[in-house]
Image (cartoon, rainbow, N blue to C red; front, side, top):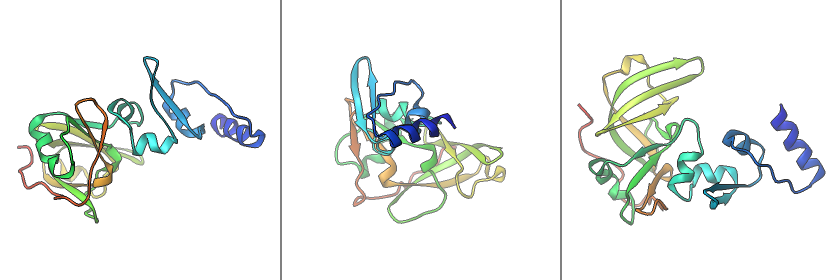
Amino acid sequence: EMREEIARIQKTTKVTTIFVTHDQNEAMHISDKIMLLSDGHIQQFDKPNNLYDKPANLFTAQFIGEPQINIIKNEKSLANFNTIFSEKISSVGIRPDSISLLKTKDTFSLPAKVSSYNKYGAEETTNFELFDEDIIGINVDGITENNVNQKVTLYVPISEIHGFNENDESVRATSNKKSSIKKEASK
């Protein structure tokens, strides 16, 4: 309620307001724009959804979002993503809510194994083994406790796969390249 009231007052009075918080959730809910700082340096200054959907760098990607973005850094795993990036990447980020079992246009397929599944009311959390990495999915369509220890194909919209170069700067994925991986899932 407090967030909604602050946002309502700010919009009603049309006064530019600077609100300082360490609570990313609060900032995402009441801000028109967010300036994300780290060690006195601006990491990104943008609309809240752009910080989440189009992070400028690895710091922003990891700071914004709960649960935190899955970061893949293992060279063997990264090699599988080279087909969708136009430059060398040193890490890939996939948000837990971007993972699905449903193939749609412009999705990237990933072989995985379901390692655990938990349901907490409306929230479902699934852990996957993806090559040599562990990643988490939230409310993944089609997953139940019956899928634990089974191999599955995960689909992630290419536009929601975040690459980062050796300087941790964002590298955009392109949808006009190969969009699947033919390797075996983790054993």
